[in-house]
Length: 205
Image (cartoon, rainbow, N blue to C red; front, side, top):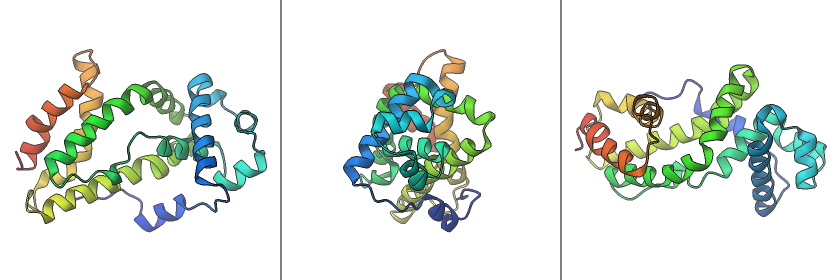
């Protein structure tokens, strides 16, 4: 399987923060950031507004997260309904179906936010990098770990070419249906897509 184009060690280093906040306080802050993001968008969100909404000092925010791009990306990751690293049903099909089940809930909440962030990232290299390092790369790493478990269980041949393209296939499920059919990728569609496209490509149908 291909890996992301930044070494894992570097990505881990980029995600490490010296946190003096309790988990409860971090969760409260992350939820406030996502709430603000939904209200004013990325360009309208300021560290002043986050500090006021969360009753924090700007110094604390910058010490913990360096800047707005890092704070936004981390908040999105930590408020996701489910992280891929927590998915392990014991079978590849079960894992992919669990991702589809959870993704429908996440998509309903995140679709507008992510469209806005995708647009903003075109003009903001720091945001683009933060989203890749703190939100996207960890999920890709977790998906690769999920696929390695399937290989270890004998469900997928280790030299199966499609292993390099599972991320692309999964992204395609979400991106192409609205473009081609004008419909959102609901759970029924995603489950059918897994059985008709991903599993056969992996030789695990």
